[in-house]
Image 1 (cartoon, rainbow, N blue to C red):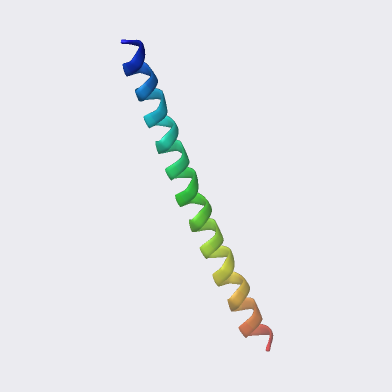
Image 2: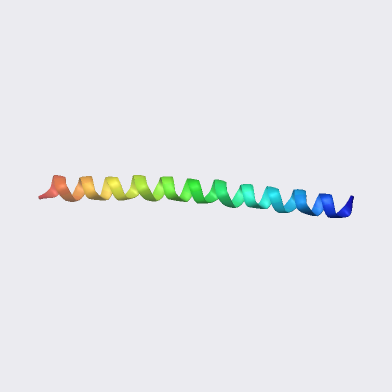
Length: 43
């Protein structure tokens, strides 16, 4: 029982990490695109 709850917690942490990574990648990608767009626009 104790072991199971521990695995469950680890799984939830892994999900949180994956979700955060996806969010960060999404924001970084969007930021990169807007920076590139501004660079092209300002030329």
